[in-house]
Every structure is written in structure tokens, then in C-alpha cells.
Image (tube, rainbow, N blue to C red):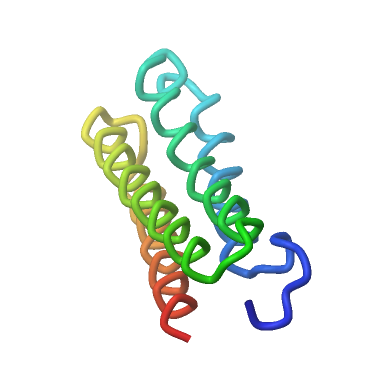
Length: 117
């Protein structure tokens, strides 16, 4: 855990939080906000990514932490899938979609690197 005393010290958690926050701001805008099912799904999955990092940190063993980081990666993938749906439904422009999708990819890479270290 590289000197982290609390989960909020983890850069992967900080980045996942910012990503989730950015997505939350986006889903409050029209016409996205009218797609209530997709709004709930993307909000839940993006928040789950950061929550699983936090939850795993407090589990007590390295093995459990790694398991929860795997769950976080799954939530990142799910969020990216929801971003694809939002783009296909024209709730996101190409650039915004690309930036959000790429940020999820970067957080996932950083999480995998963290697991490997």
C-alpha cells in the first residue's frame, strides 16, 4: 500500500473519485438525465469503482485488497460500457466520450500496476 495510511491517500482512489464526479456532473445534463436507467447504472458503476478500492483497503489482508481491486476494475469496465451506450444514444460528444473512456483506461492501468507492485 506504499505508505498509504488511509484509502484517501491512494492515487488510484483519488483518480476514480474524480472520474466518478465528472460522470455525475454529466448525467445531470439534458438529454442524458432523462435516461433514468442508464443514469442509475453509470452512476452506480463509477461510484463502485472508487468504493471497492476503499473497501479493499480496509479489509486487513493483501489478498482481500487485491480481490477488491479486481472488483474495482470490473466496475471501471462496466462504466466504460455505459459510456459507450451514452455515446451511441448521442448523450456525449465524441471528444467528451473519448476523454472519459481514456481516463477509465488509465485508472485501470494504474490499478493493475498497483496490484503488480
